Length: 150
Image (cartoon, rainbow, N blue to C red; front, side):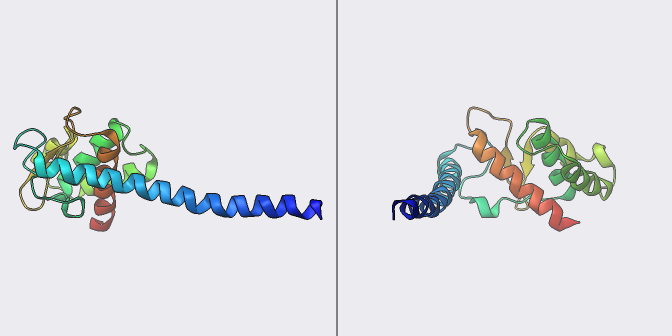
């Protein structure tokens, strides 16, 4: 009987560990969303951009050029993996923009300024106002948006 109780205990522990990991990851994601939401509600205009009243779900690049620029910024600053798939999204977006890297939206984005579709701006380069985890989530969201634009 003792031989079977150890594997059963291990199976039970493994089963319990998996949901705990998922809960922790979910909670971390929620913290980052909550932090961005709180920051957006309380930030004065200009601190990180004019983003008061916005939520993570409403953050979208206002143009393909800006999305490409933000993706470039995120890759350079290690918020996104600078792999071939991410670079391909950025390059395809940039290829669809008249003027390419001379586009004002791309220029802003490559400096870390997300210009949203409703005319507001979020400055990802302001390191004091926004934690890295929140910046990473914004970068992930813009990359997903960029993929959907292709």
